[in-house]
Amino acid sequence: MRLVPVAELGIDVRWYLWTLLLEREPHTVISHKITTFEEHLAFFKSQPYRLWFVIEDDAQNWVGQLSVTKRNEIGIQIAKVHRRRGYARAALELLLHAHKPLDAVPGEVPGNYIANIAPSNEASIALFHGFDAKLIQYTFEIPRGTHA
Ligand SMILES: CC(C)(COP(=O)(O)OP(=O)(O)OC[C@H]1O[C@@H](n2cnc3c(N)ncnc32)[C@H](O)[C@@H]1OP(=O)(O)O)[C@@H](O)C(=O)NCCC(=O)NCCS
Image (cartoon, rainbow, N blue to C red; front, side, top):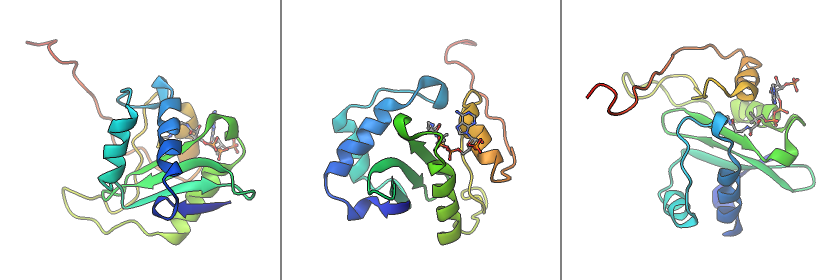
């Protein structure tokens, strides 16, 4: 298995990453919104991440993606058909060995990698617990208009 930088792949990768987005289950994402391919392309072209990889298996099939923002936020998704085969754990191990988090900038960048995970996303919570990740924050949202 290896991490292939998205920038080294042809234009097909844009379509692949969009199909992954469409696969997201509502219980696994914090703010769920249908993204059109045009919106996805604009996002892609904005170079949104510090690191962005397609996760490739040993037969060079694409099995998912891994991103890291400039704020040390990790995002990972494995396509449904490839889950529970150890790809997410292996991809995170590769990331942690090859790329240090950016240094802390007070109020802007935490000095460690973090992952923002919906409370109902049990698979991801278990995955990060496996890396000795600590819960550092509860984020609450107040629905708009409820106190107007
Ligand atoms: C979370 C996700 C990335 C896991 O990918 P995966 O390749 O299936 O995970 P792995 O096979 O490497 O599993 C590693 C560990 O994660 C945990 N895990 C993975 N899937 C799980 C599930 N469905 N239920 C409970 N624990 C799970 C387990 O602890 C597992 O270790 P184990 O197999 O020894 O029990 C995948 O389910 C996914 O893409 N979900 C949607 C996207 C998402 O939620 N991303 C996280 C936001 S950052």
